[in-house]
Length: 219
Ligand code: CTP
Ligand code: CA
Image (cartoon, rainbow, N blue to C red; front, side, top):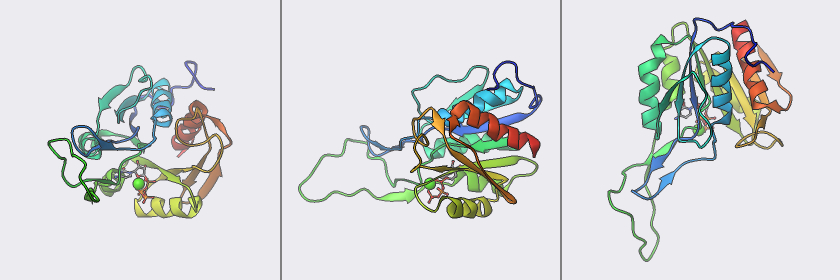
């Protein structure tokens, strides 16, 4: 495992990472979110920092320790995350988006707590901005890497996202594999580029992070 003694092969490079869940308010009490803990993104941020990069970590609300020597931008909603990335994207050399961003948010946020009534209550939703899709449209020399989380047709769906979002690489997670996915300290990730598919073995998220960055450095 690469730790303090690793090669400084990202020295002078600016790396932006998104991590964790977003949280979309319904009313002052409730929100919509997901099971992301931020572990994978934080591991990438830490590994990039150890390799000498200047790292910006845009993070949703998590309960894990923040990596040291990294610029942290705390956000809550998909819109907050979009604004933070939008402001920092152009200066970056490498952008890795591992955050689990909500695809929908409540159309309005109630100012008072919503009370239960007789009969059915429903909440109207609207789409959030696709941060990764929007940013990669204006990429210049940045290496842009996305993540994808699938429960079925992982390869096919992830390849489609690579194309559609104009990415240099996508790290595909299969939620159905043991030891992979939300909250675990290990992960099983498949690295997909235009011309290659490499399935990494079950490893710690720190080791997976190192291998993701090894691949990006080589490219
Ligand atoms: N992503 C993003 N902004 C969004 C939604 C997703 O930046 N509003 C990013 C994620 O951080 C990830 C990639 O897009 O790097 C793919 O996310 P995923 O949820 O797997 O794909 P979607 O394009 O949202 O498609 P779907 O959820 O329908 O599978
Ligand atoms: Ca999504």
